Amino acid sequence: MAKNAKIKVNKDGPYLVTGDVPLLRMIIETDNYGDPYVWREVQRYPLRERYALCRCGKSQNMPYCDGAHAMQRFKGTETASRERYLDNVKEYLGPELELTDKPELCVGAGFCDRYAGIWNLTVHSDRPGFKEIAIEEAANCPSGRLVVWDKQGNRIEPAYEPSIVVTEDVDGSPGPLWIRGEVEIESSDGSIYEKRNRVTLCKCGKSLNKPLCDGSHL
Image (cartoon, rainbow, N blue to C red; front, side, top):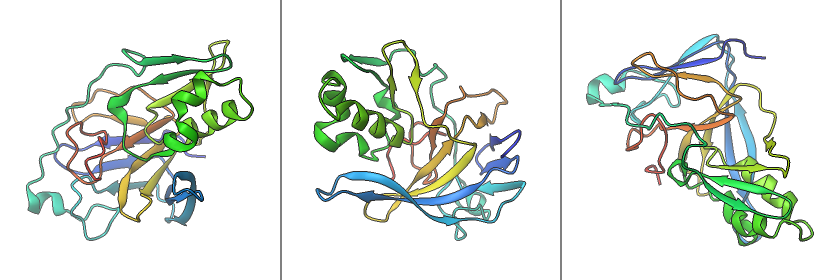
């Protein structure tokens, strides 16, 4: 298990990862209707105590940094809000579940659309199977935009160990970096972002919500 897992956002440069954080690659698989259904692991990179991941999107050695940001004069100014997840979330109440939704974290993975959508599943969570599918869809949301809660107010989250996933979308195109297991993310100014179980970081260099992904890769 990774100890003292940390990501440092380097000013106008890469993500500096320390603490023996596992790095893997996963792709989205779809169901018979073409909707995103499950993540499938396809590769594990050699475990390293420290490494640098590309943030500008121009590296020839993806997902690792090769210094392309310097040649490209990459501007990685961080613009993401520092408000906490639960600040200003939308809430959906159902008989068996509650859902919180922070749309500005959406990266377009699409798991939430299956079976008429997680919002409908939550509102009708007393119907057979709806509760289980809603929980599954929220867990597959890489950015943590969607979180389900039981009626006692307990957050329902997958038990991730600290890790970083290089994601690929349904069509095989590159997605964001999926940070799992409450890895500490430090800004280039030294402040710490809120620790969350599921976070997505931009690796195409185009996000307007850096260092978080905003779906611009799509």
